[in-house]
Amino acid sequence: MNQITKILEGVGSVVQLLTRSLSYAGSLPRQWARFVEQCYMIGYTTLPIVAILSFFIGTVLALEAGYAMQDFGAKEFIGSLVGLSMARELGPMMTAVLLAGRVGSAITAELASMTVYQEIDALTTMNIPAAKILVLPRLAAVLVMMPVLIIIANIVGWFGGSVVARYVSYVGIGPEAYFAALRHFTKFKDVMNGMEKAEVFGFVVVLVCCDIGLNTKGGPREIGASVTRGVVVSLILILVLDYFVTKILL
Amino acid sequence: METSCSKTRNPFTGAEANAVGVKVDDVSKTYDGHPVLENVSFEVTPGEIFVLMGPSGSGKSVLLRHIAGLEPPTSGTITVSGLDPTLESTRESVRVALVFQAGALFNSLSVYDNLALYPREHRSGDEKAIKQKVMHALQILSVEDAAQKFPSELSGGMKKRVSIARALVMEPQLLLYDEPTSELDPVMSATITEIIATLKQEYSVTSLVVTHDRALALTISNRVGILMDGKLITLGTPGDLTKSNDPRIVDFLNPKIDVLHPRFKKLETQATT
Image 1 (cartoon, each protein chain N blue to C red):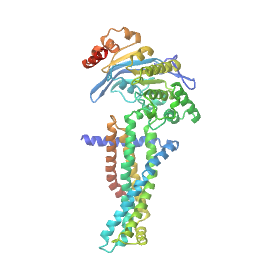
Image 2 (cartoon, each protein chain N blue to C red):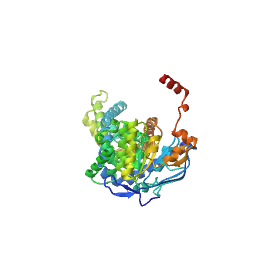
Image 3 (tube, chains in turn cyan, green):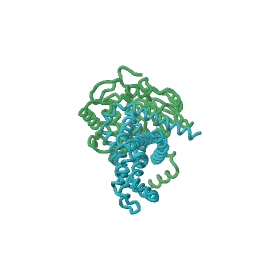
Image 4 (cartoon, rainbow over the protein chains, first blue to last red):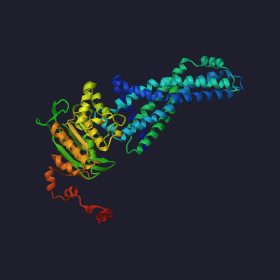
């Protein structure tokens, strides 16, 4: 019962934070510098690891697909499998998981530290809402940067698959055949669905991590506990939301 | 609470504004059933320096957080200029600044940006006017050389002074200090004490100071309250307190070496021989 109460309190707190942040949406143009800084943090600094991860996801997909399909003589369809898997599922999901681990943990740590060291209290006494200057720019930045990350993740993942398809002996199909199948079966709608998923995941990760950071209580030791909570809750929410968002988008 | 003769003078423009008073009425606070404040009542009149003293853990800082509007009391009421300090609307109409014990400076911002944050967010003037205001506040506290430094590069005393400067930039009508001289050497403590007195004399800002510092309390305050175990045990002028025969007050103001642990007494004996 106590756990259910805590979960409901958490949901209520996140909804309140979202409402408060959105009520300051009009101030966003004046917060351009903070928005750009967050775009850099969320997008640019995450990009290399997203690219590396996506490349290897593409290669593994091609390897596994090649292995499974060689018995059926359907190796020409490897491109379609990699293309669809990356665009619809693995691109958005793995990018969101990386976002939770890298950006979500950093956001929680920063805001938890500001809370513990009374910087948030100082903002309150100065009548500067944390939701306005700390949460809103991050939410806006993640909405802008997630599609960029997904496009890059997809392209790099597709490319990774083509490398395996070309150079691994038991797969052995050329890039023309690989990309022809990929183009034929991966529609624009599939890519858009993946982006919509990623937007939801990214938004929820940032919002939840901001809320957990701002609700940190106690001393410096609680900062670490909040970071762990932020990442774990984000990962659970990504997986749960994945099912529901996929169901809605199908 | 407000009186027409109590006006704060803006340190930057010289403009006058009403100094504000504070009313704490029968305030109690409990955390997880544990009482921290019990039926505390007092008033701070506009323009005065009111000092709240008491041993560690007596609830002084908790009370200050309540007056700053950071927490609501469990029971009783607190008003600042007749308004509930926890409401955003009150913060918009009454400028209350809090100087935190640890400074609470924004570590990711330079000293200059720490001070400029408030006027920038509240759009009080263009960048040139903000710069003038920030540098003036830093000059008042003699820390203008630290403008481009980050809080992590400052000493404890400088952090306190920057924290007071940041409060000053808000052009406060009520200035709350939480242990402004703690962790400072005697010279720096005297400097901070002088700064608090000067701010009151020059700008008539209502000041509420929470401190252990007997010298600060007895030299610059108009009135002093002593809080023990969450209860306000006395309230009066510094003169009233020094004349008091209440053993709790006498012991608190003049701590005897006898209260120390025998181990420390032994060390003291060794040192003198």
